[in-house]
Length: 109
Image (tube, rainbow, N blue to C red):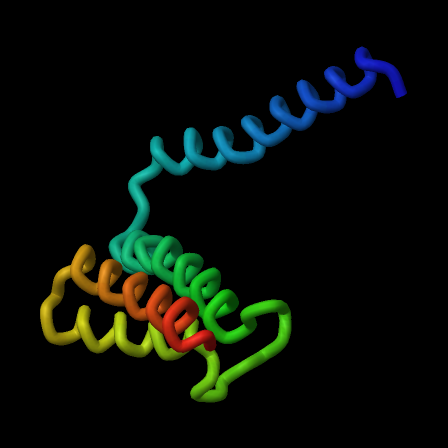
């Protein structure tokens, strides 16, 4: 493969990626969607983030680990509790990160 082929493939992927993402957004933005559809669409970002986080928390290293020895799971549980009682996203994030670092570094989990 030469440089021209590689750059052509990269440019083609960029154009296709833009078209696949932009066209539906452009079409849907011009249509008045019913309330239930808008409410349903509002849950998509939260669902995607939840799936990404759950995958990383429950499968560290690619293996399912729901034991108390999983520092990711313990930190996630603490993060959920902190957010539940404080309603502070920043506070919960800092608490979760500090817990994870503590468990990994100090306790060697």
